[in-house]
Length: 101
Image (cartoon, rainbow, N blue to C red; front, side, top):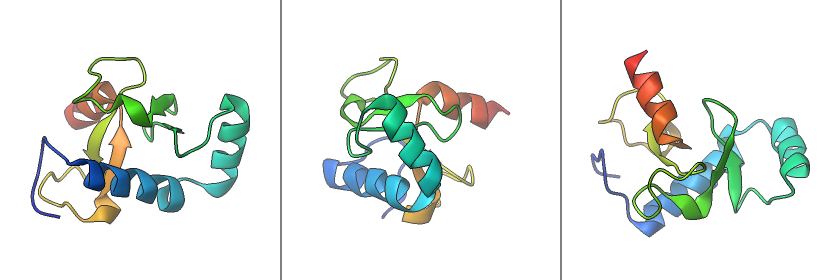
């Protein structure tokens, strides 16, 4: 993926979401979380920072400032590192808090 900090197309967002739920979430945690929330990880997932729900349909550009909205965050904090292993869905306020320390 090319360098980006703001706009991601639907294909890229889907790839990032799928990578997060299949490779970055702890398997046991994700099963327990799904049972608790009664939602599939294809619809919702826990924020990697706070653990609260993110709804896939509430991507920030389309449903800003909703309680379960999300953006694309960078695990290593480097917005130039757009490798799929570095990208995760995260609440906008959690990403801001993480960035500011």
